[in-house]
Image 1 (cartoon, rainbow, N blue to C red):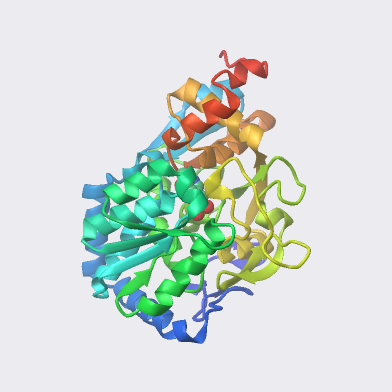
Image 2 (cartoon, helix red, strand yellow):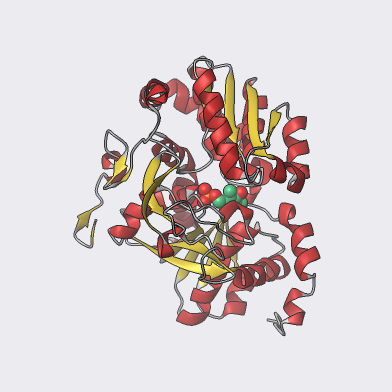
Length: 417
Ligand SMILES: *Cc1c(COP(=O)(O)O)cnc(C)c1O
């Protein structure tokens, strides 16, 4: 299919190019000492992704350990409430550990195993990536070191307990602001010293090549399953598909298998409290080209050109850059990027819980909010498929403490249908 003059036939084979570029975005901007380590990962992945042994093993793990395929669910009550298009959810909240992240962590763990590595290391912010990776490490019998800022260790105590219970070593980073950025630096330094025995496992479609490609490929199971399931359920492809965009892994996973289809694709960025500097994390909408964490993409910058402060009610979405493939798909116009604010995400969080009995992750609630807005505005009979990237148990206590369990009533929102 051509789209804005760009041919999407064999898109996934053509992008990224050999050096890891999607147009001008991507690449691997790393210290020379790490080049051999990333080359080793790239070569191993390129061999293994064509190996039937690797593919079959990953298939078996997905079915037997993760509980895949996850269902596609038609939200009849939510659709009726919105009064326009029909809303469907791809239920990644039902993937083992409650979110999509395990899809790429199991792939990365299996890759480490095939490469003969003993250990996997990573940083984590809110702890979601750390928990998924610690799960993979336990499954494969690998050691696991998770670097985490001391401030986050305090804030995310339940996830720290989970990681420790799963056998991971949580290393508290006490430099600087003691949050995600310092954790990334500490994890990279550790990797420099230990790369012979371990691999670094990145938590989204970000970082140096080959991670944006590899994580996309591992997450594509979401879109492959959803496409087949949706066709079987309705006899048609969805009119619109959408997903929230933090680093961009759950969205790329859903989008990749649909890029060559006549389907409208929408990524939803977090608008947070509004469009002022530091109040949101909408890297595509408000960002400009720049290199951070080893790759070129769109990023939010402060007055010195450094990564800007970002904010979202969803800690999984507050990243000042975005996967390079999203920047590319935005530039060529194949994917449209919209935003949802904290308030809209919270409304979706409470509404989906009450109307469908599904408590969504506050990250995923951004995508649900956009689908609700579209369904209400269009007043037509089309279909919207939303990636419900995770479940909201992790957010429940915080949301209720901060906003109350009567959020909808307080705002005069009646959800009677
Ligand atoms: C981490 C996380 C996200 C954001 O990450 P992406 O790489 O953009 O997918 C979204 N939803 C959930 C449930 C998460 O845990």
